[in-house]
Length: 528
View 1 (cartoon, rainbow, N blue to C red):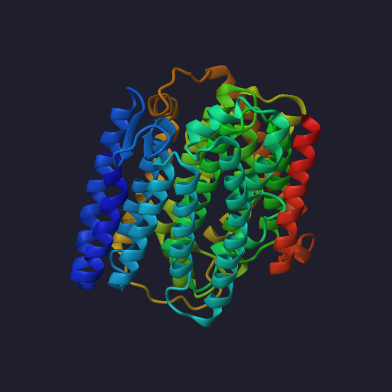
View 2 (cartoon, rainbow, N blue to C red):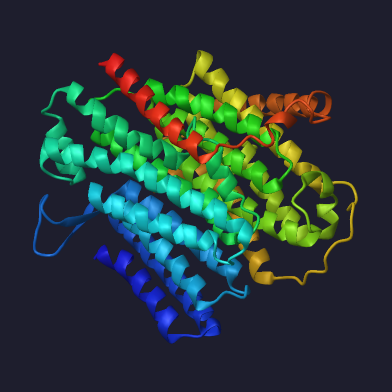
C-alpha cells in the first residue's frame, strides 16, 4: 500500500526519538533508509505497468484521501529516498541527536507524501509540515545567526501558502472537490476566464517555492545559512526546491485550458540569467552554489514549457541530474569549509593537493552541471535543447555559458597553494564515500544517459550521434568563450561586486509576491 511509504518513515522517526539512543539511532537510520530505497525501487518497477492507486479509508473516488503512484510521482519518490540514503551515510559519523534523525525522516515522509498525493488540501498540509521541519533543521544548532533567517524563511512561507490556500478554496467553490483529477474534469467544463484568479493565486505560491523571478534572492540566502547543517543545505538546494517544480508540473496539467507556457518560459529565461549574474557576483562558495541552483531552475522551466516532448522529458531528466550533482557539491563544500576555515573562494586554493577524494567528487559534479560530454548533464541538456531554435536556442546556450563561468570561478580552488593554515581534520570515510558515489552516478548517468532516461520514463527516444556531437562542439566553444571571459572580463571581479550584498527585505518579498500575482493575472487574462 502506498500509505506505508508515508507512514513508516514517520513511525520510524518516532521510534528513534522515543526508544533509541544517539548511537543506535544512526544504525536504525542507515538500515531503514537502505530498505526504504529498495522498496521504492520495487514500487518504481511496479508502476511501469500502470498507475497504482490507494484509497485511505472506506471512501473511493473523489471523496476520500487518494494516493497515486504514476511514473512521475515514483521517479521523484525514488530520487528522494536515494538522496536521503546518501545524506544518511554522509551524516552517520556526525554527533547528531535523536531529534535530528526524527526531523530528518519526518521531512522525508512529507516529501514522499507530497509526491504521492493527488489532493490539493493534502498538498497544502504536507508543504506546511515540510516547511516547519526545514525551519527547525535550519535552526537546529540554535546559533543566534541562524534564528533571524530561519524565522524569515518560516514567515515568508506562511504568506506564500496563503496565496495557495485562497486559490484552493476558490477551486473548491468552482468544482466541489479538491482531488486533482476531479478538479481537472470540473475545470474543463468552465469558462477559461473563471480560472484566471485561482491559477494566479496558486502559481504565485508555486513560483515562490521554485524561487522564480522576482523572488530569486531570499531562498539562496537561506540555503547558504552559515550555521546550518551541511546535509540540510544540500537537501534544500538539491531536493527541497524540486518539490516546487513538481507541484508546477502537476498543477499546469490541472489548469490545461490556460496557456501560460510562453509566460513561464520568459520567466525561466530571466530567472536563469539573474541566477548566473548573482552567482558570479558572490565570494561565499555556498552562495555561489545557491544562486547557481536558481540558474538551473530557470533552465528547467524553459524545457518544461517548450512545446516539444524531447525537451519536456529532458527537463525531467535534468531535475534528477541537478538534484544529484548539486547535493554532492553542497556536501563537498561543507568539507572544504571545515578544512580551510573560510567560505571565501579567494582564500581557498590547492584543494587538489590537500584533499583528493573531495576534489575528485567536486570535479565530477562540476563536469555534470556544465554538461561536459559523457556526463549526465550533457544528455539532459541535449534533449532539452533538441526542440529549441532561434532566440530560444541562444538563450539556453547563454545560460549554459553562464553555468560554465560559474564553475570556472568555483574551480579556482583546485589550483595554487593554500593561503592560510589548514585545520587538521580526520578522514571521514562515510562522508567521502557519499560524495564519491554521487560523482560516480554523474558519470554513469552520462555514459548510459539515453538508456536510463528511456527506462525511467518508459520511453523510446534515442540520442542522435551527429546531433550529440554538434552539442558537444557547442560546449567546447562555450568553454573556450568562458575561459576568455573569466580571464579578461571577470578577472578583477569589480564588475559584479555591487550585486554581492543584494538582498530582499521581508516587505520587499511580500511586494514581489503581489507583483508576480498581478503580472500572472494580466498575462493570462490577455492570453484568453
